[in-house]
Length: 404
Ligand SMILES: [Zn+2]
Image 1 (cartoon, rainbow, N blue to C red):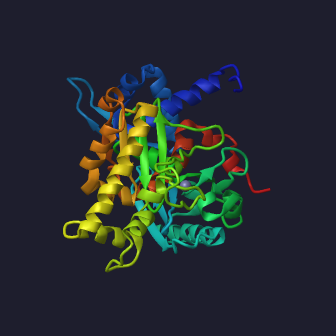
Image 2 (image 1 turned 180 degrees about the horizontal axis):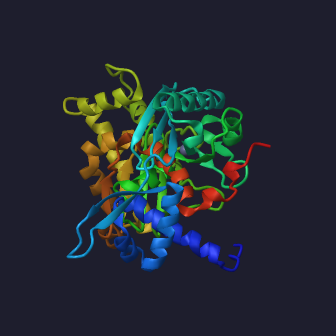
Image 3 (image 1 turned 90 degrees about the vertical axis):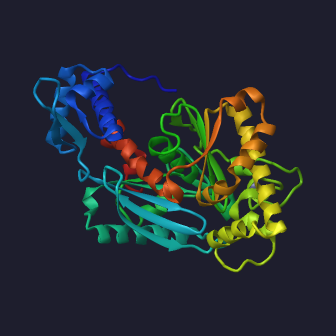
């Protein structure tokens, strides 16, 4: 790793700025004194940096509270309208584009349904670009006020120049998604794996809040996961994805879309669950079909059996995560994970207990995500926020470079 260059006064100021902005972003309303106590920065440093932030318009005063006998304390908050961020969830059954203000309040949203068997990259790029135009139009936000666009995408996203995506299940072989999007937008882009963006959303705002070590499992049509270690989402050598969905649960088992056999995704992804059930359901579309299957389990032995098996495969694989990572929390999310979890969580926990070592299991809680099925788009929108909070948005990043 490259050694960090010598610290300068400017670095210190930038880091103080990052610490204070992050504190205000996550805790929302704070007085200068509370900021000083929470961050350990001196009152003078807080005052100096806050003055700069107010001057720039990124922080605003938001009323005051009485203090014990002294002068009322002025509360500060991030200015919701300082800038806007857009999150894109490229799922398997839809592309969702959402625009948020800086308090992460949704200002506009648009969905484009996808045929689960058709993931041509051109169709997806077109849907994302149409979505960007649509949310800007319906919110009335100017493109110049957008701080960045985060795109959560299935597959392995290479860290490095080009942002190549390897989506083996869709025949995407080194697809330059960022470059393709660049042909239709000049907004700053941040492309990452969808399971990782969901993990960041749950870590920042949901069931992962405060966790130092956790695994966030994304179960939709396919299956992925995001590893959180020491309070932040983890990167591999070239990719941020944890390809949990393609770990083997049955040697020589069902064929998986990746080309291998017996992968977890080939048993517990929504598409695979419906295939394993095999009989027609009184509805079409994966979300309504999975809901119908879950409802049917009350009266159909076959439907109940398929769900019991699903809980077993999921629990076994979560037991593997517990043995390997010793997380304090396992969070199950994704639209299918949340639907399944409502009914199957006790059985999943029991299977995980039976298939992991007692000690690490005893240190782990297994919970459902708290942000609902839209957490991928929210998490994607945190990517430009992360750049703003860390100060890297003000440096030249790969995402901000124009296409060559
Ligand atoms: Zn596979």
